[in-house]
Length: 234
Length: 103
Image 1 (spheres, rainbow over the protein chains, first blue to last red):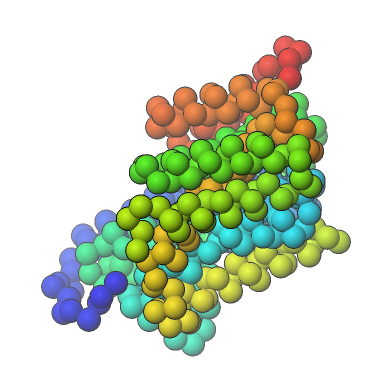
Image 2: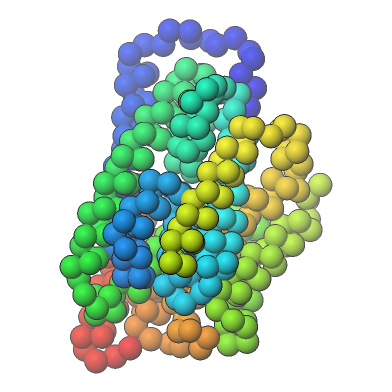
């Protein structure tokens, strides 16, 4: 957060810089791989190839993109899909807050930095030990993922179009697994586990009772209340 | 048409959120409770989406091949399989069960 202290190694070795570039690119490759599953699931949820690619280029936040297509594909309303997608994207504002002292973007870079502010670019950036390596990590990871994710989304969308009946290939189960894969790394403490369980129960209870798309928003509201009152919260 | 509205609205809001982190005064967002709620929302939303995507068809709760796919996905996650492997195993499980006539 605080970058005003003097940097210990103003000109770090090429070795340190290369290590950051390698780390960023490996994260980009791993993320790019699941762009294929997003692209395929999106077209089988009823979006066109163009809409699918625009989501990766414009929205560019994996969890929000999966949520949007999952709810639209399941028959939920536009409002519910946009609502869930946007709530999932709120955390990117916190990342920006955290990265602002490091990136200090001005002019057009402000918009580029904002667009590239996602889980992975933030994680790689904050893991570095000084400001210039953090900036390098942010740019390499952010640009690498942006290009890889957009390209693999397009390839996945073409593949999804060619597949035909999504259920025959288990693509609906692939979407379940994708949400679980995004949730899994968050379940490392008691609080998110408790919130996830309550959200799951609330969702199951509401599915038969309310219009489609509402259960996910209700689960988010209940989760927010639990986080607000969780012991230790100030 | 409504799909276009969803795509564009979600994209604009997502960008506004990202830009907000760099634009609004830190003290507005830096309240510990707001940080906590924002950090915990993804767990609630993703858990809800797992249930919806696996156990619902429209407004009905159902148990079909997707549930078996999810079980396999969880096992793969416990074994630290990469994301793409988890997704492919779940799809393969559901596809195989359906080919065999279940779910």
